[in-house]
Amino acid sequence: MSQMPNVHDAEPIPEEARAEIDRLLLSGDLFRYTAPSDAPVALLEREFADLLGSRYALAVSSCSAALFLSLKALDLPRDARVLIPGFTFAAVPSSVVHADCQPVLCEVGEDYRIDIADFTARLDGISAVIVSHMRGHTSDMDAIMRACAARDIPVIEDAAHSLGTTWNGRNIGTLGRVGCFSFQSYKMVNAGEGGIMISDDPDLIARAIIMSGAYEHNWAKHMAADDAALRDAFGRWQNRLPLYNLRLSNLSAAVIRPQLPLLADRVARGRDNHDFVADLISASPIISVPAPLTPERRAPDSIQFNLVSLSDAETLAFAEAAAARGIKVQVFGQSADNARAFWNWNFLPGGTPELPGTRAMLMRACDVRLPVRLSRDELTLIAEALLGAAQDVTADTRAFGT
Ligand SMILES: *Cc1c(COP(=O)(O)O)cnc(C)c1O
Image (cartoon, rainbow, N blue to C red; front, side, top):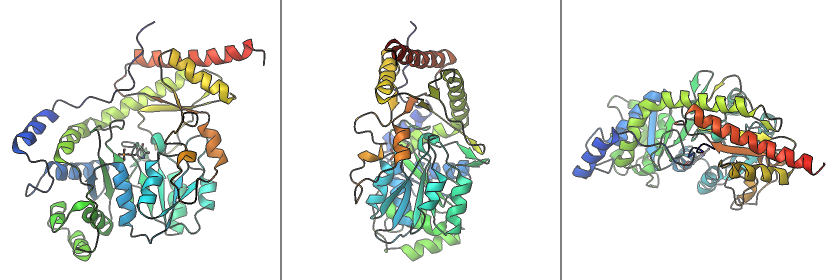
């Protein structure tokens, strides 16, 4: 059998990053506020805001930091209730707890998207919403924005895994009041660690910039000279906010910036790869790959699918059969201590709620990484391994005469 591709490793860093990293190492200019202007982190913020089409960007140490700062920047009262999806990474409820707010969970459907009826039913008494586009799956943003606008509830988009995804032609992360992205190694842009938040709201971004660690008048390095609205906002918040020091280093910016021009190509390849594998594995009667919503144009670097009409034991047997064929399948709800299974979020104040629909989905939802670098031949090997594993479990079932 041919060699199964390595889907575990992150994407390599473009060669162009080296000259800039060398320059930074030689000068020791690693801190974003040392240079009087145009520090690599500041340039990254300008380039990222322009790329996404937003007014402001603030680069920070992680997407988790961006989510936390977004909540703090909204100036919510202590114990404010923040609605989040029941299927997301543990970073999302953690950011809510960290910001002294109360996470409220809503159901997520079999297509990994927020259950709009359940979401709407839980909106009373909610002060803010974090929409997590989990694994890049976009929930119905028209319905969510309409419901939240009607109640004047601000929406934070956790777009950690959605860089390059569009909704009705608009970039994900620009629909809510704030959008948060990750540069952790398993996202579309790899800096090991890092995050960025974007917003058009000068008051919100001024608060976030100060709290991210722009002590004294370092906020001046975040603004165009003619931005009176932002200058006024900094004046309003000077010395009135705690500093959390969640800044990004120039070294990280040097790793990120040369990847931004590659994004469009990565997105196109990621989508082609995903759709190619989705088509092949959909031939199996026990594999179902949820379709995108109509306004959504995705930017996947992994594939998720549901196992249909299998028991728990058969679901685990499928993952084992895939592993035996050289491909790692994570079933979100079946691996011990999975950080994306809400019942493991035992740090939630008041305990973890029950979400029967989300739980049922997590028990059958499979996750396979598909790095954008993979060739058609490698993708075919992965699809064949998954189809083979599906056949193994259905053959076993027949053999035991159920
Ligand atoms: C990766 C991820 C995060 C956390 O990002 P960090 O930069 O590692 O803090 C949050 N939400 C989602 C949906 C993610 O995929």
